Length: 271
Image (tube, rainbow, N blue to C red):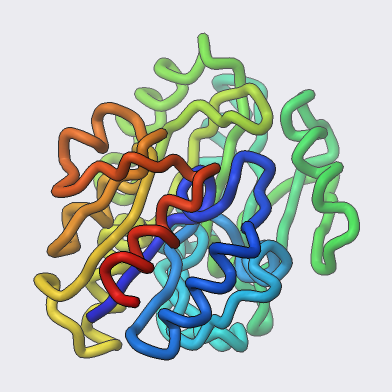
């Protein structure tokens, strides 16, 4: 069996912490079955947030662009090449006067690149990352050789036009994830490789772990979890999940992320 949980608003509480109860249950279950996470966050962010949790199975990171071992070594990567990345940057700068934040794989590590001219939402997120390593500002932002995520933060009123413009230009060469971000009060447009979303990454992880789709259980709360729901046998939505995900779920928990929903399910089913 393989159990896979989203992080934000699923395993994590609203304040991005993990309760002692969840840590205890997670670590006990980890000794009995395969247990891991699928998140939009980077390896660095995951290690910081999940201190005290035993992580023994590969992790799905950066919306599915990367599958990494618990020690950070890469098992699988789906990245946008430099030529396509630069074309995306040039289009959005010309049409909307906005440049992205880029998460790239370089020299075996994830690196973050941001433009000199930031909008107010980008300034907020960069402020939270200042203490991390491998964060680079550049006067002329260009794509890297292996771009894992190209991320835009903008006013919600612009998001639909922005997304349509990118889709019309680049079509099936990319995957676009669009969502309202609860932490920064803006709209996120995330551009990935077509095989770099959570659903595709879960199919790959099932292959790596030699676990069938029917023996995989996933937990989620939002739009970017729809992909992993489609790639799993049992789909579990937390009580605070969006209605669209609850409609696709086999099980809707009575507990929310703030009430240790995932841990209580694992306690009931495994322990």
